[in-house]
Length: 152
Image 1 (tube, rainbow, N blue to C red):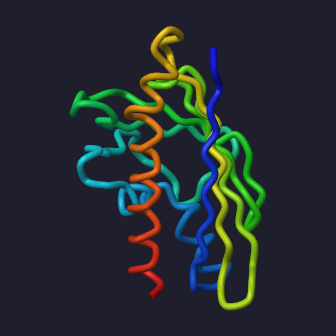
Image 2 (cartoon, rainbow, N blue to C red):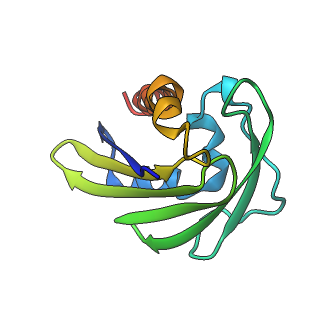
């Protein structure tokens, strides 16, 4: 069964401290997720900052407006350098998302590496090419736009 990978880079015109403060707070995830995804955190009492082992449950509508439960575990955090989230329950067979942050002249270079596998082996290549890859790119295009609005 194929394993796919999407890589994205974005320069944000803000300090590493400001960018990290924003991305390390689970409450800000909704801000950078397109409305059509129907993103809603359902875990109550989340702390202000993520930590390794943190579990975040939310509803999301990734395909055809169908509401699904997605449970993510923050598996690794190195402050102001990177964090990793992995899907525990959700639409993917495998979802491993690395978020890297590097200070550069004039801001921060953010790099995302998403490694994923779809649950339907016979249809995965077709589904990825026809829908999934494009949808993921649109989600990250939206995030780039929103972060550029926050830090123009």
